[in-house]
Amino acid sequence: MLTGLALASLLAWIVLLLFWGGFWRGRERFVCPPESAQPAAWPPVVACIPARNEADVLPRTLRSVLAQDYPGRFHVVLADDASDDDTGETAHRLADELGLQERLTVVAPPPLPTGWTGKLWALNAAVGEATQRQPTYLWFTDADILHEPGNLRCLVAKAAVEDLDLTSQMVELKCISFWDRLLIPAFVFFFAKLYPFGWVNDPASRTAAAAGGCMLVRRAAFERAGGLEPVREQIIDDCALGRALKRRGRPMDAAGRAGRVWLGTSGHARSARAYETLGEIWEMVARTAYTQLHHSPWLLAGTVLGMLLIYLVPPLLVLTWPLHGAATAGLPALATWIAMALALVPTLRHYRQPPWLAPLLPLAALLYTGMTLDSARRFHAGRGGAWKGRAQAHAAGRPDARH
View 1 (spheres, rainbow, N blue to C red):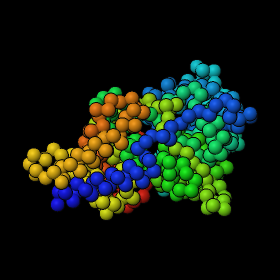
View 2 (view 1 turned 60 degrees about the vertical axis):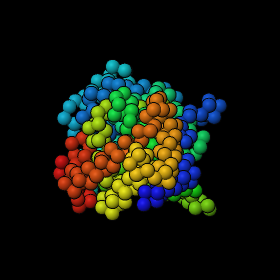
View 3 (view 1 turned 30 degrees about the vertical axis):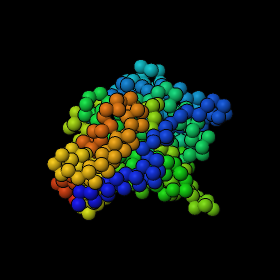
View 4 (view 1 turned 90 degrees about the vertical axis):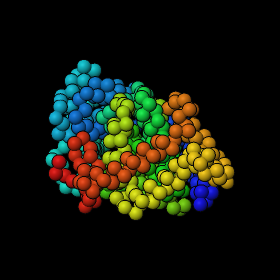
């Protein structure tokens, strides 16, 4: 029995490491194209920012957007989604201070209707204003993201050079405390395992995803895919939009390929907020984890069993080796634990974290399993998908527009 569990876990890791898109290698990193490859004429871009109660971070984050060193026509639309603080006023004041009043428009979305999540409704209001300016690209970025001054220039250059309909950067999250150093690199590792970036970026693969903190979208492809309307109920809206653009972003070619998307890690954009405590990270993950499983108890059960087999069986068999005394279980379990630790090292290196955290991946997996179970509990209690005080999913499986 113990030997069978150890060998099953080892086999699972052999498949993951050798045949699962090289997700653990971290090769898909955003690199700005050289000047020789950049466009001769820079296309117009409008940034769209959904914002709800973001006055505390806007002086840094909105500044980083407004002050982009972009050679082409550029405008910013911020949708102030019924904020309780002075989000809109802060945005206007910052633009005045920078002398960039003409670059910023602040809109107030209409009341949230049934069938839309709050964030997407706010983003849709920004898009509606942005499209009146006829941009070639729409730049979707969250209100709490800091961008390097040349990030937009690099995004547009990459999109133009590689003919991309969606160019998405997984922004860097801060790693300061023990908990975020343990859990944030593991979060990126698990996300890449779920959506191997190499497969996402392959036009011949059906795998699609995106990272909502920073997405540059070709407007023609966005409109061809139906805009935000087809994904209006999605809690994990970035990946839903990535799927829509990859499948319907342009006419299908002879090889059966439609839209072209790219997703990778980046040092050009980072979160202005830190998730330093276990509770803060727990809230972030529990908001959407059960949605990722399509609110299915069967998928939840399978996920929990899979996490136990893949991540927890090996260290448990190693640590209890003196008790069970079965070398046929202990040796493959030890090899598996070493293999999973080594697989995490490239992600730790990207986040500039020490390699001694790698053997703690099973602990991170245990905590994420708990977050997923809690996410299911919240959903069935009518508190699923919370965003800025709104519960956006409940047990009926649809967004809740009453909050």
